[in-house]
Amino acid sequence: MPTIDDFLVLKFDDAVINSNVATWNITPNYYSNQRSSVCFMSLERANIIFTGVNGIHDEGDSSTMLRCDINGQNQQISDNVGGCMLDILKTDMKAIITDNTIGTDTGGNITTTTTHTLSQVRHVAQKYHNDNPMRLLISARPTTIKISLQHHDFGGAIVDRGETYIILRFEYDDLKDTQREYSDQFTKTFM
Image 1 (tube, rainbow, N blue to C red):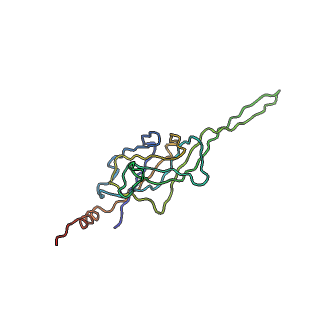
Image 2: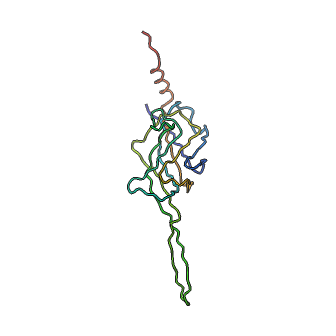
């Protein structure tokens, strides 16, 4: 049975952001109503830029977990808070350095001194490809999506919102095939 895929691009410019949680209100007309009532949701791609507090950088494997408020029928998280984990993103730390040059007049000669100051730490969490994404079975066509970023050095600010986005993939089975399959599975047989 072939699937029909919808892709929803969630730009952080369009989100309501409260600390580490981004909320999008999705217009129902973004989705086709010619699809089944359940679908598989997965994270297709992501590029998230956020500030860090301490400049902590794990040599090796620093990561950011994306957690969604939508319950996946085929996923459980041991903390029992609700919602589901979308994915874990590879995260790199970037230091933003500010240069300050001061000129000093020493008897007709100007001497310049440049100082380099760490002005900000940013983290870039990205996902470009995954051969085997986590496919979460959810109720189709969510109208509100909340995604929280969980990182050990989260500074509480999403920066470069225009370049920060999440792309979700929704995989639907054909509506008639889904209805036929459910009917075949749940039709009582009498003996």
